[in-house]
Amino acid sequence: MRKRWTEQIKGVVRPLLYQLFSSGKDSYSCPLCGYQGPFKDKRISRDPDLVRLDSKCLGCGSAERHRIQHLVLSEVLKDWNPGEKSMLHIAPEFCLQPLLKQQFGTYDTADLFAPNVDFKEDIQKMSFADATYDCVMVSRVLTIPPDLNASISEVRRILKPGGIGIIAETYTHDKNLEYREMRNGRSRQIGLDTLDLLRLQFSQVEHFDSFRYDRKFQLINRMSLKGQPKDDYPDVIRVKGQGFMDLVAVCRV
Ligand SMILES: [Zn+2]
Image (cartoon, rainbow, N blue to C red; front, side):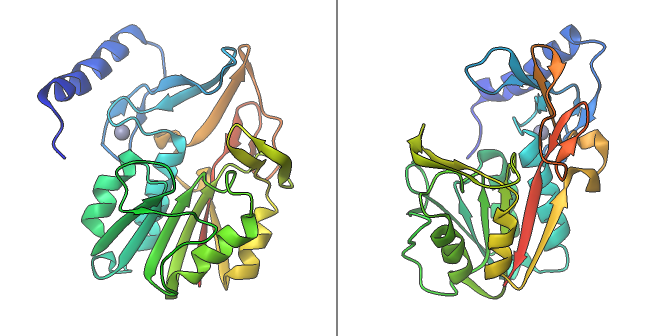
């Protein structure tokens, strides 16, 4: 969809103003939209003291996780002829959609609650036939459904032979932290042992982390609590004195 002209102007003026008033901030580069300049700090919860520094691209609104997903996809899809393949994007992120639509022969979206998707689906029990898609992408969804194993099995079930699941999560614990009852619409916090569950379902699970790519893309979740770095995360994702990395699991059928 074409952006309205007022939004196009805002998209140009806002970054210029921000750059003007944020001199001294580091400059970064967005692999999605090509914007170059400072990224915006982002408040991430109701706690005003907890901030993610240099997070949001002023060109397209991408955050760290969108930028790494884009870089991983570009790497994985190279030499895979996506133009002849189909993708299901579950809980689709707006800033990633235009390029995926362009790249894939068939690009479908699904979500249980969000409007403007092609299919209303519960990831624990999807209506698609076995082996429907070549690629399924899921990002920061697995904290929500009560049945984590069923959700992973369903992603695997609807993938074709040779298919790829791209599963991006924030692994802030060593082990999954299951809630007894849903809290704020979530069933758990994701732990690194989710990667073991993925390995039970897929023949190969590779994970791509932020250190794989150039620092100019700003892929570290630089957490600041009351002005101090917050970095109490598992060793695999911890970036000492800064915060944590995103991991994107590339799961092959
Ligand atoms: Zn951007």
